[in-house]
Image (cartoon, rainbow, N blue to C red):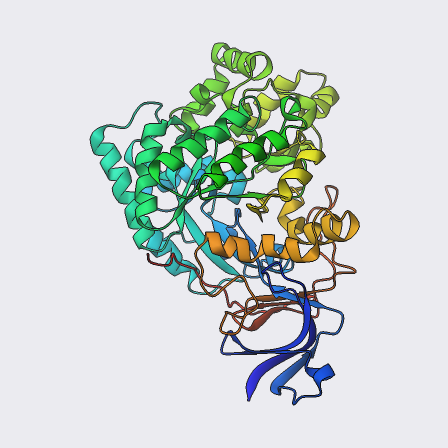
Length: 536
């Protein structure tokens, strides 16, 4: 007898087709049978060891988070309800060009310091891996949800070149090509970049093109956080489209937003650019989160010249009065490249987390508010935070536009990604609320997408980008990574005031046919594993 039958579910299968009523049978981690309208037809209904009454619930493929920052959280937090409770059954990590493999001892320490604000320092973990393959093997010991990995171009550059702003030598470029190829051979699904983060931003297009050619050879894709989401954003998007087309590499645009005042209402221009490329044969997808604010580290706003050489040299520049004054001018007057070419507006920069307990009273306030309370300039406050928190401060940037968010999420190449940072006292609520917010706010309340369209954006479309032949659809023979939710009540609990509140209306989530969420509560099941690149 089979393991489980889910009875009378309203199946939204991920294809975009209309929903249908069915009994769905799961066994051995896969969907073994789908019996449509079994009760109405009066036919023999399937039996199983366990039967789950899904009357009133939608059964869909598990959601795929195309942009996650759970690289260490997957290992640190076996519960991982932040994602499991949303119905996420697969995350893509290694984002924005900075993660923890491939590394050597030096580079691992540098990366840990550079992205402490994203993932914590990791001193609570035995970080005993060095290669991509070893990191994936560590995930295979058992995690809450599945995970795929992108080779991080910035980490690769740090390993081969260092943190200096200079072109790679021919030998260094060869080493980077080898490291990217090795990571893909070991199971990575593609390559990521953070082209407003050091040291990835120091790579010219010619260098990136060489690496993208390697990615194309292995059937992966390139996922850039491109050079600007503010001034020059449309030019930055066009740059990535041209680069990947020349290299023959599929392109996935990370958190494809248009932010800051200069881009208000300009989403149609971006989509026209993408449609022109798609219609001429380009292979392009993108992801977005359904919120207007962004989130990153305070240090990420600094001009690239100030970030050269790694964290210790950044801190040295910030403590030197003359250099700090130059940094301030670039931030407040010229518009630093780290702040997307737009002069910083301190009233839009909210402190969401610090690593130093003595700085906790800054959290939840904008830099300007915190400065006003202390009777000092916003730059003085920001500089103190950067130095005393050793670059570990995380921020929300309130610089987005709702009309851009809605327009982009309707696009034919769109997928969902949380870009969720799980650290800090008040993280962005997208880490806990992205997927139920799509289903509740943008489907049920606003009708921006139909339910069937939205589920396709969150399941089949990202599975196709990842080249996963047996995920992303409710089909016989497919893996039983599934979510059951109530379309009438599904909603994010997370808010900007209470960002770690779990969603409602998602009572059941299965990974590999096993319940990781049951009756709305996290079980102790760790059925997730590393999902490796499908060989070409």
